[in-house]
Image (cartoon, rainbow, N blue to C red):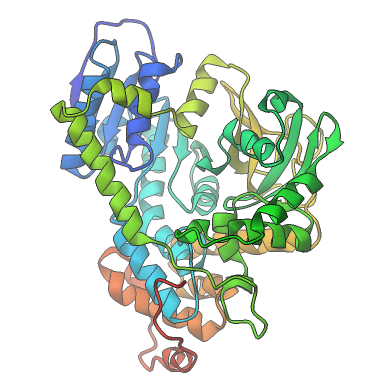
Length: 484
């Protein structure tokens, strides 16, 4: 491990980033160390199995933080970085766009359109198969090398990985998603209904649900119920809505308004939530007013990644000034949470945790879901970690959908831990956008054939007759990747 050591003798936190070359986190972490008081002059330990990415991110950190007392460490082995860690952030995915493309394309051939493809459906399940064993290995290493450290998971599917960590490790952990980053999330709703942002402190919104399947159950402004105002604003913006050109963003106003009218609560992560229902798959006898979901844009994701590394190269070469880095970048959800845990500034954040230990009532945060439910909820954060605020109860219909998604996530983890293909088939068969058991079996078989170099052998079917594939092929739809 390479370390660039300062002469600062004051104890500062050590933050380990596993996946330092991440599109969404490495650069933001460097910016945060330069700007957030709780992270200044900390030890920043980069871990990445790609030596080129690791080198570039390390050199960028050296440039940005050269006039500080920050200690920068760099290694390809997380075990070298873990001793002395206070926070370990996981933000990695091996060849994500490549495998995500396979999973989404195979799903689309069988009528399973995944507009995001990282949480449920075949893509979500196979992402877990590919990444959870590594996550669990890191957690077990932390148990001996830094047992008091917090593990902060950014790897999707966040709830599935979080459930696995709670069930099968002893580390202190929680999972994050930047969809509900505060205060930006509150600001977006106030802007939507035309209210002044200076009323932020008067805005009480209660949001909860399994990650990427979250719903606003309550919204009040100065004691006045504004949930209906928010619904109406989405209905207004849905009129004449145009195709936005990106799968996760297409027709989200229409779908948000539609689901809010049916279920009585407002979906708050529609770019993901819309793929949790069969309504927008294009298979119904009576179609919606919008086209079926498009499949996740892997080309665009790869272009974003290329652009990120081009910018990093420009900073390293001096083509772009570091002043632009400081102006353009910003802190991240994880770095903000870590900063609050250190300085205890009273901020709250949306964090994925089990449905227990409510900070402001005697009951559970979500009263009609079990204590073990792993949910994204607004949490009060201090040095002891996050504690959820009270939310309320899910309307009938949505409550059962929450339990369905939780069951799929739990089954996926248990299939991995017991190496049980039957549990994997059950998990995918339960998925709301998978239309038959035969389809689930065939999806697993086909994806395994194309990804077997990164998958365990137990995932492979032992049935050489492939009867399930024959049945599924009869229902097969035309291959379509870019839809509408």
